[in-house]
Length: 133
Image (cartoon, rainbow, N blue to C red; front, side, top):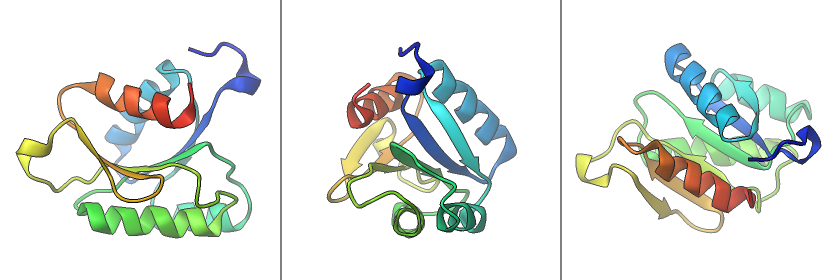
């Protein structure tokens, strides 16, 4: 875990659900990340367009969306912000087959789909790998 604030990678988290958002922010901070939060796609697009977001990774978890839908949101946000196509994008779809839990899939380039399950260390490992932490 990084201890110097200037060296902490920043994750831009887009999460609609209040309880899940609080839990994710708590987890991400415990992993050593600074966290910038948007409450939904519109909030994220506005913040990104205004130049208010510089992140090392974009993490998107939206209620009731498929992997393709969440990837599309993340890509739109990344296009509107200071992130370039190389900024890692990790999406966590809510709708998926149970056999995919705790797996990661490269969706092309630096875009990843992570299927959250019962092993939070798997998400931490993916984020660390993508942010070089």
